[in-house]
Image (cartoon, rainbow, N blue to C red; front, side, top):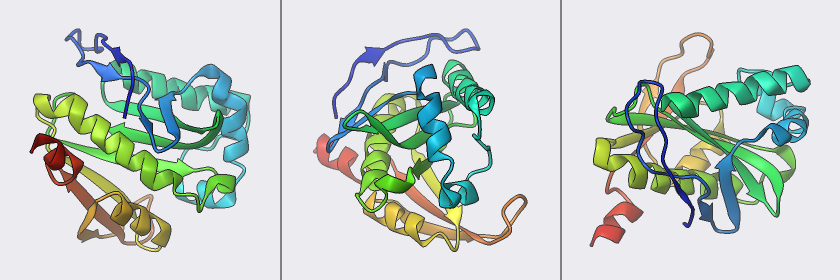
Length: 199
């Protein structure tokens, strides 16, 4: 993983940690979303499978601009770090680290893969890259666990979790807006490559 360190100030006025803005893993580039990604977002969200497992529609330029604004606000607040996943310059996915509050000990990873890119290992590579980045960036500030949550019938996400080193921790009872039981997979600091890198 390589990238450029960027520092900033969170909405709370405290100095944000150095953030690697452009991690690269196994042929993929992860970078913050840009306004120019709007048309590719709209195209990706035409996919029925993606729409089934996401909650915010992106059907037109106005909705794309709203979706992008949410990502920018999350970066500024230090609560949501969304990356466009690119393969040969094309938007093939999204991966995001969600933190309830800056400095917390837990976070959640979310992701989707554009329909034409499925079956190429995009999601596991992106989740692995984000996980390594998150621990490298935030472990010194207390981050110790990242959860990966999905609906129980989303078997593809179970495979992504397994390939990314996230162990099944529990079955989560259904709760609105999710109609089915879910799975919580977990990766802890020093579970995987972080441990290997520290030895």
